Amino acid sequence: MVVSITATAQTSKEVPQGTMQEIYEEIKTPYKYGLAVVPESSDKKIDCPTVFRKGNKWYMSYIQFDGRGYETWLATSNDLLQWKTLGKILSFSDTTQWDTHQKAGYVALEDYTWGGSYNLQKYDGKYWMSYFGGNERGYEAGPLAISIAYTSGDAAKAHEWDRMPAPVLTAKDNDVRWWENKKLFKSSIIWDKQKLTGYPFVMYYNANGDSAINNIKTRWYERIGMAVSKDMKTWKRYEKEPVMHHPVGITGDPVIQKIGDVWVMFYFGAFWKGSKDGAYNRFACSYDLVHWTDWNGDNLIQSSEPFDAKWAHKSYVVKYKGVVYHFYCAVDKADHRGIAVATSVDKGKSKVEFVK
Image 1 (tube, one colour):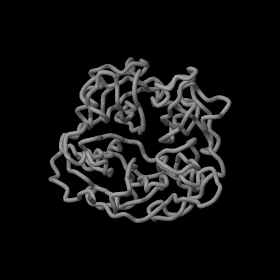
Image 2 (cartoon, rainbow, N blue to C red):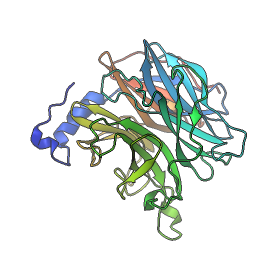
Image 3 (tube, rainbow, N blue to C red):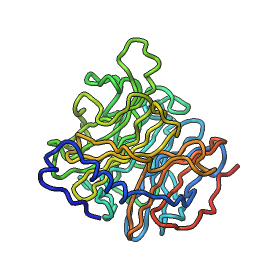
Image 4 (cartoon, rainbow, N blue to C red):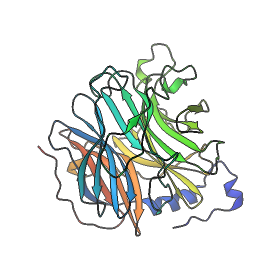
């Protein structure tokens, strides 16, 4: 689908709900295929897929928690349904470095065109990845900050990527904003060659925080904001307010694609006021990458099956040969966590199950 947008509409900060409805009809995936990637044992948890293509194969980076912290892994597939794990690309350090126990990575600079190549683009002769790190053991424990990793090697092969020596964004920076002064989480970076923000590299990320004194209640709320860069190494926060948030709960894990002339942000919501759905995948649209119109209709993904009965959230969506594949984190009632996929046409049912 190519969304038709008039010149008048493109100058508007608001995306009409009619256009939002068109986008929804294009991206919806009512058929749940089931689990695609699961941990090898019940004491590990897999999360946050990023899907890209190289040659005639698909690849997925994802993060795994094993009780100590997060590491980043790589898997491959021929058909987007059957996946094989290849190995780690960001591992624990066993040093005193700032990120020794946490390295949750998200491959960057992918072709964001809806139904496009989904290839990773090289900049300065390298592939790039953003990640959040920390030096405390446990589930998202201690201070968490965002940094950059890169490789001159083959992004389709499991090997350890190089990392910058320090974070590029932290909750202690002088320019930190009120909504991000506790922990920084997932980030997603696009290469905007039109430089709509004045910068070629645009990062969206979610974080939590609150500047109110002793306001414990709201400190776990997460919101999505922006940062920009000219060289992928030095990053500058963009605007003071979050670009996507809700009064209560989590608004997080943004991923950007472009459908016609409309930028689409896939993200997840959780624990919103008045919602009984738990955690769910949503979307918003923009003409300029800065001002976002939130979808006011049905969730894209929500809990409905035994394998995702607790949570169904954290999107990565691609369209290939006319079929939409919506990858997401599925959590069952026993707290097993893995990657599931839903599709726009019926692809049958997966035989993959959680290891009990």
